Length: 218
Image 1 (cartoon, rainbow, N blue to C red):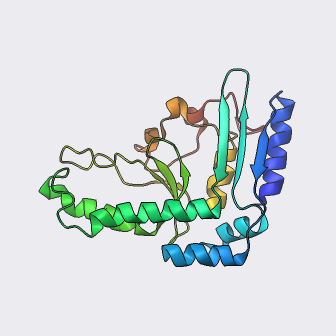
Image 2 (image 1 turned 90 degrees about the horizontal axis):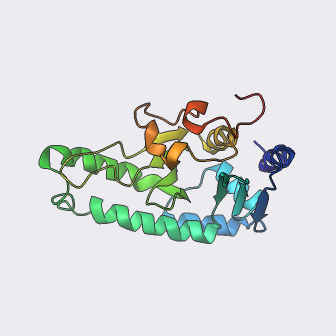
């Protein structure tokens, strides 16, 4: 997947609909910035992500809005911000995994082992996209998969409310190509949790509507 080509094609299709999209990005970074991220996080960025930062842009945003106030939005943060966000994420994870009593007040004993499995699984996650409500799309640095993280996966009243991750893509390309089918619009009611029942984000029109679907994908 070539991002330049993808965004050029998406822009042309939106312009045909009378919508003026915007793509803003920073100049690409050098490989030393990649190494700084990896030193700070103790995680290795998958080659595909590194190539985006060093070959396309050190952070970008693609967005649009129509006359009905429907909008689409997607991007990656600058690597400096990704470093900071990942360190904050890791600090939060460690505050639970490193304290055996951290779940005592919010998860009942029968569910605590599962809760700690969830926290430990998230050690290798990199928060690449913040939904603004505590939920994130994360890159699993171990597998390369994209996971949707619903922040309320434990409900605070003793049980595990949901899974701690909803698979959203086998890798970044799979995730971006699938979401681009809807020009990066959110699902109905901005509720990604609707995919919990399916066990993964299925990228089907029934979840997103048909007002903004790319040609040939209705």
